[in-house]
Length: 329
Length: 265
Image (cartoon, rainbow over all chains, first blue to last red; front, side):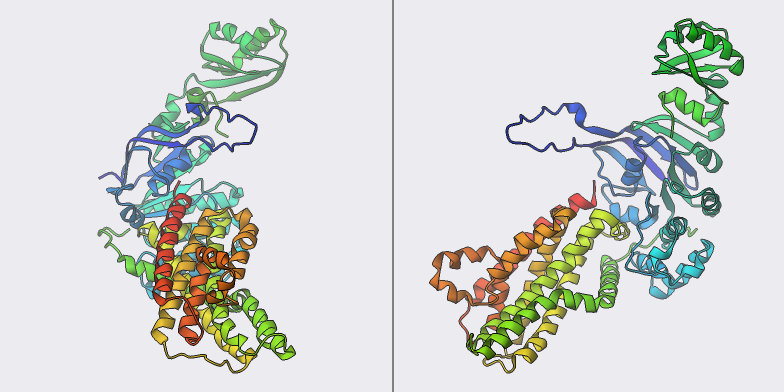
């Protein structure tokens, strides 16, 4: 059985309501005003997998996690978590999952340990057992000394670890983390990675969304790259990196529209693709840095002046740019 | 990781665990809670039940008319606030309720729990105000506790109606409009809620007598009058109880619908 399965999953948010004003004719709302957050998505995550969902802000990552954690209604299609249908049996799904939200949302009326104890009792665990687990989890997260502190006294990283402890307090089979390292300093991020690796080694299925390439590369068994609600690529980080086109991405920023140089770039030897976006010319090529003089010349032939040049070795980042024409962050 | 399948949890168990959370928090905030809900009625009792009668501006018997209304008011105010305020906060800013929405029960149970918690807090407020009012006003002629079942029924139904109303207002109104809620909904409700005068007295202004029937507080006030001071004319019992049941159902339906909209996107 797959830990997670989605079939032709689709989520459309209605167009935001437009307030009518007297004397002003209501603007016609085009059908495109609806927001398609998830578009015919088919996914299967195996049990015990560390699965990454990679995409820029607004790609649909949070919506996808919202659907799988029963907090967002499906527009069409189906989704299953641990064999339970998220629409038909959300309570069963909730009993098997732990959720770490994008922004920590601890129960501020309760102390740190009470957050864990009460949360566990919501899952039918007795108070004594809940307290024992709570202490153990706080120890593992390295915040045992804050046990009786108020939640507000924790730093951002500590609150995030409290959220992870809370998500684990009922021993779920699948753990969802929605961009868990956003806003953490590098040290807190690394220690969070350690915790996540440990959870994975215990055999849990982990689904994590992120827009940090490095994070996805380091932690995940497999990665789904999504943008605008669509699945663009799905594989192990190693295979995805091998799929990155050309060898090196050369980005040349001109002082004006770069499209004038795109044709010349495409005609150059060893260039697999070239594309202009505004003032930026993006060229994928095996020749890498060797191309730079020719690219500068191609721009100058049309009166453009170079403002910036960047070289990126093949990576998930360059793959993402080739798939979407956009940068991740 | 545990390999055995998770045994389904009894929803009632989860319900009581969440209720226990609310009661734990409420117990810690008890002093603030009492000040918030009982101060207004107590001030009123001090002026109209103690000062003005002393000055001879109000006849002494007025305390008998006023006491049930004051108890009704504190019941209603505390019930409505203990549901609507946390709802506004949790859904609006802090998203704290999220951890309960992720518990393995239908999400409506989380809303129903809030309403039950609101009823309990309403009862505490009413129980607190009654002796304090008696203490301030002195002996109250005609006060009787003989009809305990009726008192209990009015308290629970009244608390339920107002907690459910709190659910509706707390989930249906944007947090920025909380001030508006109190000045536009709660204040007129208090003034025209038959708290400080019996409904029968409105016979002098017939239009108002029928108009105030849309005010849920009227039925709690009159119900308290029927239970605590049976000697004073009050609305027919059947009408009171039927209205309270109806209001509870109405606000529960509206409240759950609004709750759904906020809880799931």
